[in-house]
Image (tube, rainbow, N blue to C red; front, side, top):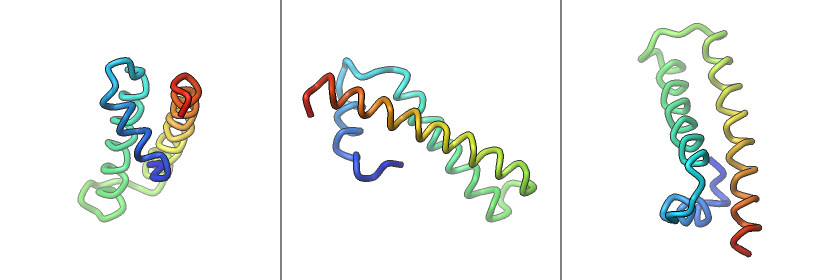
Length: 78
């Protein structure tokens, strides 16, 4: 997720003042990515509608994470 911001994401995760909301978003995004991969490969039985629903949720989380990254960058002059 947002690989171009990998360094900032690492700082946010390590920073004691990092937003707990961002950490929850990041964790849930990774969970959804894993579920989608398993659903698409047949490891977990899911129909196309379920997979699309998960993809939409994942995209919303990505947008939220991006907003948190931009906010963190501004607050920390990065």
